[in-house]
Length: 354
Image: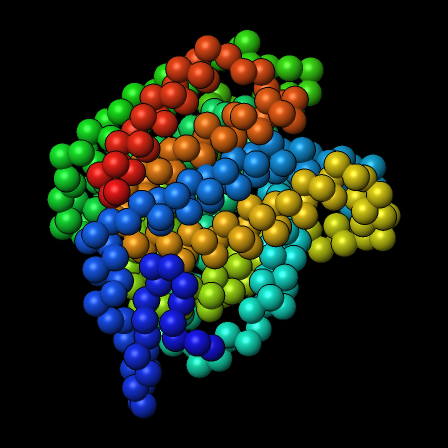
């Protein structure tokens, strides 16, 4: 592997012995000067994740329909958890394999930060996305994405209380503005429903929202873990471990819940002949998972956690736009007003870092 990365990367110094890779002051300098380029990359990640919300809802629903039409179906909550876990394992197995093939020459001499960071980031992400996918069964994609964006509150609090890094005035104002946008977007929005909307009545009130908020807490832990380990870990190796851990953990959870029987020829045959499923599944694996997670691991450490959390509030805006394109939602005044407010908050932190 080469030690000089393009853009605002870290320049690694190779030293014989256990501490083989040490970051030079380049990373801290990049963060202190606050270039707008990493923020632009994180906005691109939000675009990719926005696609994932309707795509996950459509592809996971198709996957469950294929199971129900076969002898592989497992009824009840257990079956639902198993199906979502196995679906995730397939998605991230493809992402892991593709990423390894594209970057195999870089996977040598894994450091402790690479391994430990990949494990922690992978586990928090795996559990968070599982709860998010289950929650999508009972709530609209826009609502789910806006609740996921509650990390705009959790991350600054963690940065201040746990990391002892106080917020700047402009960032604090951006957090409040983004919170106002999320509040507006989380209001009941019956006009957003369409004939293509895929939402079921939850067995208990607000189950989808509760699961999504817990997932948001796990995503906040992921943001903090990337901020911590990203200072020392190689982003390519960390990403490979993260993707692989997510695939393996999802498979273990799914099999433990009875999902091994899902791997039947009749189920796979139906899915590979469903064009909409394949388009969503491949997009989820290669764009919303592989590419976006690498870019996140690569560029998020160049900005503060609170700033990253504000930028990530654009994810629900893009999620709603993609939901409109996919026909699972309608664009409404609530969406336009709330999304515009969040966009203002992102512009504020981007100006701070320009």
